[in-house]
Length: 320
Image 1: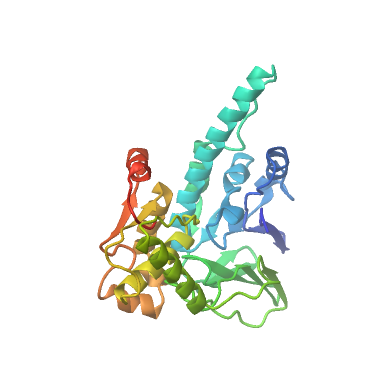
Image 2: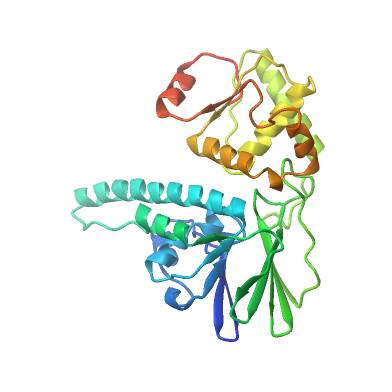
């Protein structure tokens, strides 16, 4: 699933559920992301389920084409979306510079980025944080967020209008995911829209995944090697750091092997996690009373390119 966007109409009010960036071949992405199913200026509001790029990343394009309504989301989603959109605008700028260098050599005219930093800032200015369970009125529609258990601040959406109820899941999290609470159960609905990336797969247990991670880290560090873990900056990085610190506290991973988070964006996302501890589950809340599970001694967050270059050049056994 990419470029998530659903249109809901009731009593003359038109609402978008999510406004995600379609990611594919460059030409296809430019064409797809510039087209909307309805004129942006006629959309009353956007209801945002969570901050992943495929759900929020095309909001600046929507705004650039005339949308001026509110973008409703949870408080944590507001902060993560601001981070994601600014990073996406930067990526758009860098990508278009590369494309235009190639086009200039081929004698072709320049092309414009999908959106710019100012468009991202305009979209961020329209974000309206709403707590879980608090009603949102949009014309004849009433909406409310419930915890989706996917990433920090993620939400399912309950929409009521004309005596009918619609449910929209966005992405649903797996039970017992680290740090955040499990998903709430939606009430009975007349129509349910479910998005599923792994609906045809049977995942292993968290215990098995944790045991496998521990084994790989211990075997690699024992021979003086370096464990490299590619991970999404929002959600997955924090889960991995949590798992590593949990195993270190339990004496399952050697305490002398440093752990690095080599990503400015992941570092910023982790700071946002710390600001929204109300989204954490009971286990994480209990650990917070003893120590910070995302900043335990031995976890070092790398922000600058210079620090990253030093880390890459260093001959050190570590987890990165």
